[in-house]
Length: 488
Image (cartoon, rainbow, N blue to C red; front, side, top):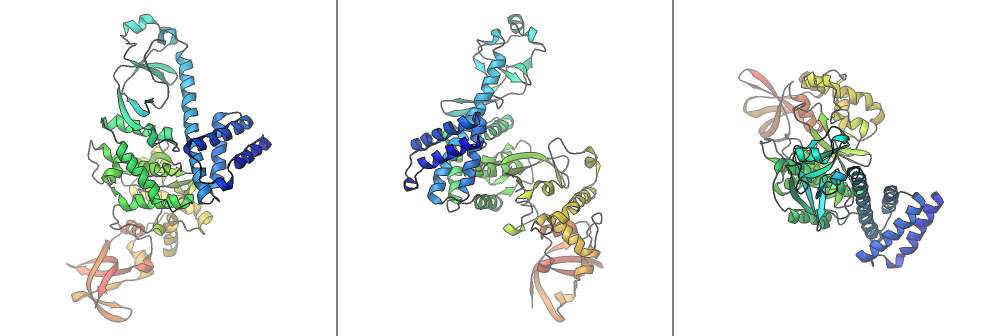
């Protein structure tokens, strides 16, 4: 098979003469793709696997392609993504039609749900079915006209489909407009994206046309990356855009579902983790990069286990833009300070679990105990990654610098013992480097045993950039940490 595949790829390059790079119309690109698909299908024998092989090949060629060839490869990727989506949908439709076809009594139903995504394309526009309840018969033998009539099942209006192997009937449902197909033609993860739009409609139940907003976002996504050819550069640019332009919604007002929607987070510039990752995933998709949204729990989060979390996976690495945009930071982080950008799975999952897989015992621990649990997990991987530049390891490096074990918490005394402090006297008098100076103004964090760990995380454990001060107020000693102060 490998020999036939190589022949098909050779033919592909014969079609793509270097002299004609950049001269292809959309119709010609489609013709080239269909020839390539047909040739490789003969070798592979399965449509979906064929698209996967082509996808791998196009990704590999994109790594070394010049600007002209890269444009053609990206156009071919779009066709391949669309083919993959179509084949997936056709496969689901075929299986469901086969299951429904076993029951003659269902032949005349007008509204059939023929995919697991609850979506339908009508005249180039995608719609989603939203419903809360459905009915089904426990046994196939009960699915007959008499029982349909008795249960007042309406062939003209009720929705019929398959769920968990059973034929279901839906009386109360709503069909919502989602998006024009042309806007998302050829994006990777198209099926999952449409499912996300349906899920949002399940909550907000708004009749609206957001096509203009999606078109604006698509144009922006491409404009931001137009000078970048490398996949890694594109991911970095879009990740930065998310963190520089969005604000995390701290209030989580009941009934405000906009914060969970990627496109509405883009419009409002405010959202939560779901909005962040949906927006980033869509911006990546408009640049032919597929990202998978993953939901779960972060066990050292303050709101665990009440509130879940969402992050994304690209290839074999993980990204969490929300956790790189902490609430306490008043200024945007520098890229080199990100903790959760392109992290391998084992170390990324030291503080989290996929949805439904979180051990029950963790839900009974205090935040401090959960943080210790996470620190121990990171400690166990320290030797594997100690030579890397992963910021997620900084807490372990810092504890080792202080002489602390994984179980020991960072505290004021251990930090002062290592880095010392300067005492602030009357009128801001302070001794620094053997000289008497006076502090005119200072922006600072007050630190204590309760918040020292979170403050250290916030400054990325870069104590070389900061200085600790001690001050007495009302006979009480306080410690301050600052890298922004003016002396005279």
